Length: 491
Image 1: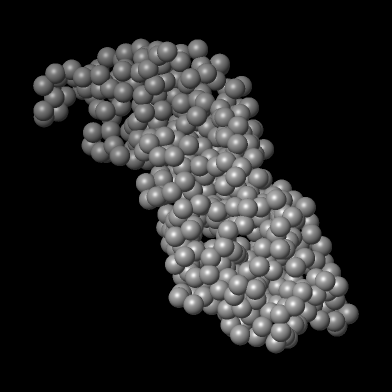
Image 2: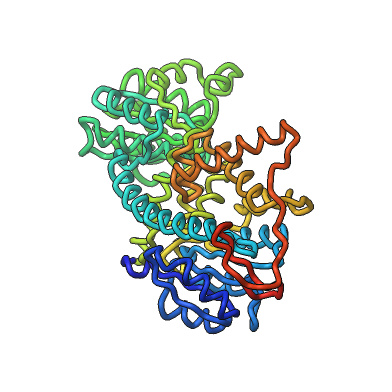
């Protein structure tokens, strides 16, 4: 996106006098102002010039401003859309925010607020571009053997992998399903002295119990019906390398006993054979279950548990390392946009808010699958909410509780900021990133929240009342207010 495109502002206003006044306000803001009087004219102009900011009257002659909002954001979710109306209501503001508007200004317009709004949006656009580049750099800098993270918990996992890899004979990796335990196992093997030797994965949960031992340890001809020749098991195939036993807690008692013999003596015994065979393998086991508790209940061999857990690496859930979410998002967007040969630059602010509010029960695997699907569905340069599963609509659920309240847009903004801060454990830098605003803007909002709380304690009104609409149009220089006629659709 070039600099000229970033400076374009489309103003949609059916009243020529009001349009001229808005243009005059924006003259010194280093923006290129284009104008339209109707919704269809604005839509056609939008498709031609691709402005980054659209300032539109809610009540147009040929369509509702919300319909124009819907069209614009469907074509380019990265556009900042501002609605103006002389008949401001809380429900209109809520509907506009739900649909993706970044602000809803009531008429008569306050000139200072209009200027500040345009300046803020332009500054945020620059910040978003810098953030995208920074995310790309960080995603590369914080990759470790296929793993992505910069949270303290993940950095500790990386440190353990480095310490363990050169010396391990057995490692136990624990963590919830989908946290990336296999990636940790591959990283350990890759950094080990046997990195060039085989790395064989065995998902113990998929092994048929009657065939489990023969698949792990092999069999000899005639050991059972259908055994027409000798066959190596997984451990013999991995001789000199590493065996990764995923969901090791699913092994049968007989298989556990034989696995213990491999760990103790480096020997395996094929099914149907009286002869033991020597193997040199390193074993990495993984489970989402509590093996210690299973051992206490007699469901898992206690001696095998102690052998496996001599070195244990616990992989945190995604909910425990939410600060890694932006890095993971950038990583997966880059991965799947390249795989599907699409030019996808990133994820919109409102889509990031949806993703940040999700609890991620499926962890990183769920996130990867979701971004993969979003990249398939994405028709533009940015992944937006319509590309994500609808159950993620936490923003809409959060706003629904306000439907019956009479509150100002300022109050809605403050509540949303508080909610995002709670989701990121009061990390202001992360909150500002997810909200798509600068930290100074966030601090200004928080300052107003503190002032509102102080006013409540003093029994004073928190928010001002709406100004009455004047019946003539004039520019109040002293008050800095653009006063509009009382008819709908004029400014």
